[in-house]
Length: 110
Image 1 (cartoon, rainbow, N blue to C red):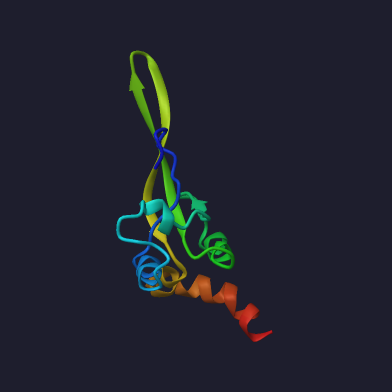
Image 2: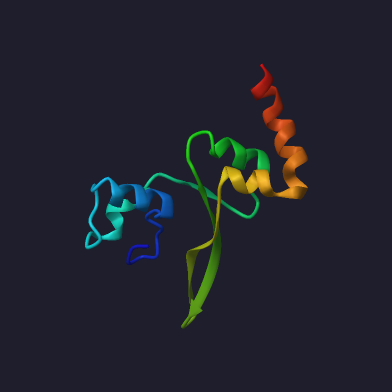
């Protein structure tokens, strides 16, 4: 996050390990060197179908919620990362498998 609380990206264990083993980053480098900067934002209202479509272009989506902060009669709206979602999360989700596979099945078999 930057000074204005905007999300800049995410660092994954797998990508960080690959970069370190490949000597593309050093342990002393800033985390921004190993960061995925391209990502999708999702909200709590994003449908599973929309989320599945996001994963065709990006490896993960950040689930963002908004938080209103009030101070001295003024309010600010902050974006807060509530979670991270991946395609594997959709596959592991028991209650959403039926909707997810109904969406991707025509794509797989045609």
